[in-house]
Image 1 (cartoon, rainbow, N blue to C red):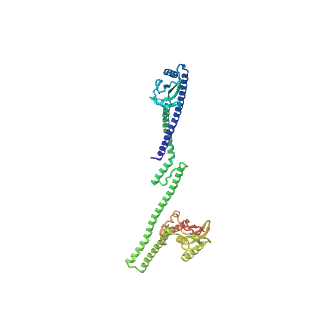
Image 2: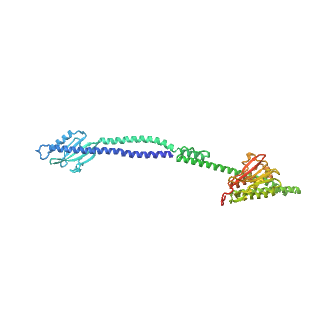
Length: 474
């Protein structure tokens, strides 16, 4: 059963119970009040009749020492005929509770007489046939006799009013319940609308529509729940997008890795088979060995870079305060010896400190400078600089070589991606250097910025914090 139907059902059950109890109490309260008023009136009339009977007995001539029965009957008949209430019946009984006079239709038994004495009045409500009566009984002192006066007062109208009250209240209750059902159905549908919207959104997202969002229709708790659901959906969609990209990158990585292994291995196996299967002259043998050596070194470089990439992604890194000029001094000495004669290396840096793992930053700079050398012609200018900037220290490597096409700049950070594959392989490139740099800088909460113009050169830079406090680790 839907929540809105449950809400509607329980609301109507509670309303029906509340109306039932309140209606029963109200109608009975009115009935009991009316019945009490009729009882009081009947007792008052009984007292008046007793007084009239005693007064009439006193007016009897003194020749009677004891009031005779026929006189009692005559007095009772006169009282009945002289009354103005047509619904009142009388019965007079003697000392032994024998009936001396009774109005026509007085059918009550004598049970009430035995509950009556001179000190109290008695009454009861009787149901005779289809009518209801109030029976009263009092004692009458008529001369030397003690008589018993009973009256019957017709109160059927009071009971009819109670029945009519219940009937009217039942009709009103049914009408209220019908109108209440319609109104509560509208209200429950309105209150549960956010739940239905959330349910629809959940189903569509479960079917794969991760971009679908629930519409927020209120600002109450359910509206806040809708907002929280949408924020959760945004986070879920972003995580799914990242997972899809990661899976796609992993597939591309595996495919590129297999391809990169295939090319040097084919050359190594081919030239090794040539050396094994036939006798070559010295020049050809040297050439074959040179190819095997070159491709083997490329495989070695690729394996080392790949190992560094894996270790960087999963390893623990300890940060410490390092002087930037020490890094530049190390790089200057290394590349002056290695490539100083081939390229115009210009080092320009300011004194400053960084919070980093020095060896990893050296690896980043070595890869960036090595890529700049590969992109430049012999004798080309390469600028390696360091500057203090707001909130950190900036490293940059600029070359004036080939440049990188704009459409390729977002892809060069991926493993095994090379803009010019043939040129990179000829220089023992494997497309892992920038991927490794990206991972290292990610550990340092930094990122590599690429500015490049095709045919004019490339500038790659990143910023590290100068000092974030002792004891912080990545």
